[in-house]
Length: 314
Image (cartoon, rainbow, N blue to C red; front, side, top):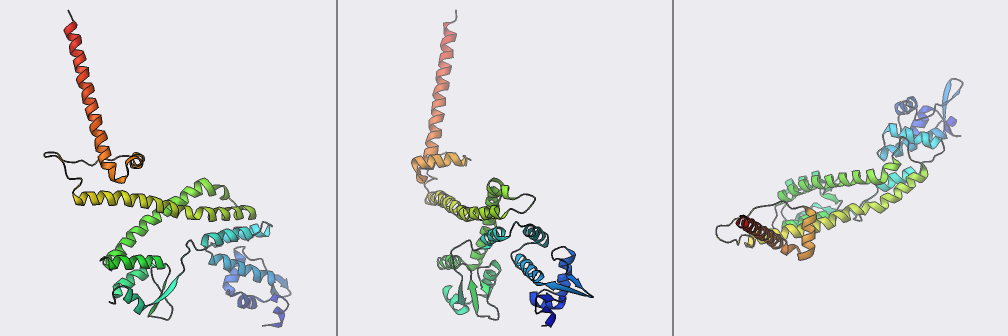
């Protein structure tokens, strides 16, 4: 290191070496207003420790996914005395793990053994593409499993007779649907909870800390809601599927057939709470039959009354 940089005064080359940025990048940050201009001493530009700290802040924010435009706003807020602690805490909360699962490492031999002992390169390639497996750098015989639970589900399905290619296809379809649910939940909470933090300027330190607390509270709600609704839907459709395949819904009187009707979900839930999932179809059919009979009786009574009035006319 040059003696000139020993007391916190750096030439641009020394600053680049210390910060890990290139000389070209440092100059680009200056042009965009992200980095203060250096002090001019004679014919040399001299940078200080503050420049080094700023470069490290920028690198950290870039790693967290911020754009240079948003970083400029954050740094301007920080320079104005508003602080970055709360904002970085909010970022850390969002970027942190959203599950309690811990990634594990598995060898290729162990992986093959889990799926019947037969190597299947195509299935492994699908799993890597989907992120169920992650390759280990400089290793061809080992993988990281980000979600052991997801891998365990695939093992159980395969043991039950589901081909690996079908499992991969099902996961692709499911992932698209789940991502849609996640997107809608995010839009919903943004509109009704987080909109007040999303003004023209970055939130204050206190506002960002409050938003981070809300993220911690609301983060599990989406999964809890999906778990409850999935359980309800699985019970409903599994019961219906079983009845159909056992012939319970096809036992109709001779000459009669069935029709599919769309009934509001709220009505279905109300009926299910009264008679249970297994009794929904019979309840709806009985209620419809009862209404038909009541209207038929009303129609007959009305016609009889009209006939009597006509008979009473002179």
